[in-house]
Amino acid sequence: MLIFGIVISFSSRITRILQNFIYDNYPNTGGLKVHVNPINSGGEHASHTGAILTIQDITNIKKLEQIRTEFVSNVTHELKTPLTSIRGFVETLRNGAFEDKNVAEKFLQIIDIEAERLYMLISDILQLSEIENRTVDENIKPHDLKLLMEQILPILNEAASKKNIKITCDIECGLKLRANSDRIKQLMINLIDNAIKYNKESGSVNIRVCRSEGRLIIRVSDIGIGIPAEHIPRIFERFYRVDKGRSRSMGGTGLGLSIVKHIVN
Image 1 (cartoon, rainbow, N blue to C red):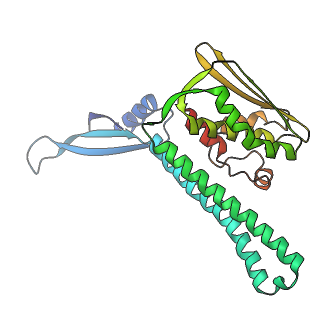
Image 2 (tube, rainbow, N blue to C red):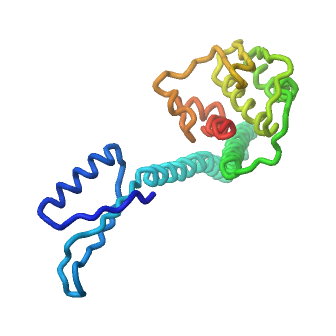
């Protein structure tokens, strides 16, 4: 963003003047771009009597570049890890592991798991991109939240039953929300799925939806391991994981909560 230009006379104080101007007007900047255009007092051969300085704060530009670089790096890493695993097991199978039926079956199961992980990651990346790029959603309509929840819970019951987790739902009657139903389902599935994954055996997940001061409050709570306070400000960042090893072993892509945030926004 172009800020403004200033005219100053050339003198031995120019450096100090410029420094003071920057310190006073851009105390928290992450970077400035300065263009200097000399001013001539006369004709072509006249000496320079001043200059116009155009100062542009590029803090946000640098932040966006950093986010883009980190995103590409993270995507590359997340794609490379399962692909490396798949290639390794395929090579082992081709070198003779197929002769042992038990070993071959185990390796094929791992390949299937890693392929599913790749599919989930690519699917989440595409969904996130679609949500970010959609400026106008033509599918926004009033929806009964209780009915939506009745459609969502059967999808999650299998994952919950594997850990003997009880899901309870408390939704005030008649609550309606103007939204894209597919996005709301996706939001709820991501939140509840996280609550199941990071819960303890025979735990519980409670979903409560109520109205407060003209807003709908959706709260998903569990009795799992929780999130340390220092990690909470970053949980909606792409690919951010509190426990990277644990998240990957549970099949997480690191994009679920980022998708939730963009749907809400």
